[in-house]
Image 1 (cartoon, rainbow, N blue to C red):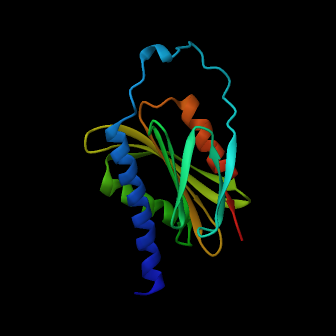
Image 2 (image 1 turned 45 degrees about the vertical axis):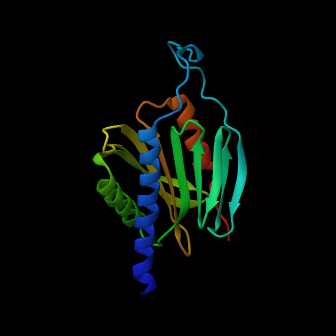
Length: 192
C-alpha cells in the first residue's frame, strides 16, 4: 500500500477511535457525586487558572501540557487525556500533512459515521506554536441520545499536521472544561 493511501486511513482511524472511546465513556457517564458537593452561583467567578505538566511524545513529534485533574497516557504516536469522572476526553496526535480544511473535513466525515445529529457550531483560524491552525467546534449525539460537544483543532506543520480533539458531555461545566482544553491547545508545540 502506498504511503499516500495509508495516511488518510490513519487520520480516519485515529478520529474514529477517539470518537468511539469518548462515546463509550459518555454512555457510561460520570461517577455519581452527592448534590451537596456542588455549589451554585448566580454569576461564575473568574476563569480558574489551570496549571499543566509538560508531556513530550518523541514518537509523535510534539509536546503538550497536561492540565491539573487530567490524566494522560502515550499510546503509539498519540497522547490520550481524560478527567477522572470521564467528562472530558482529549486525543492529541499527528495526522496527514496537507490543507487544514482537508483534515477538518476528514474529521467531520468520521464524526458523522460514528454519531447522530452532528453539527458544526463555529470554525475559526488560529495560530498555535507559530503554526497556522483551524478549530472546528460542534455538537453531536451518541446512539443512546447522550449529547456531547467537541472541538477539533488541526495544526499545520511539516512533515505532518497535528490534531487536538476534545470531547465533553453536553451537560459538562464550561468553567471546568474550557480552561483545560484551552491549556492543552495553548501549550501544544511541535518538536523538531
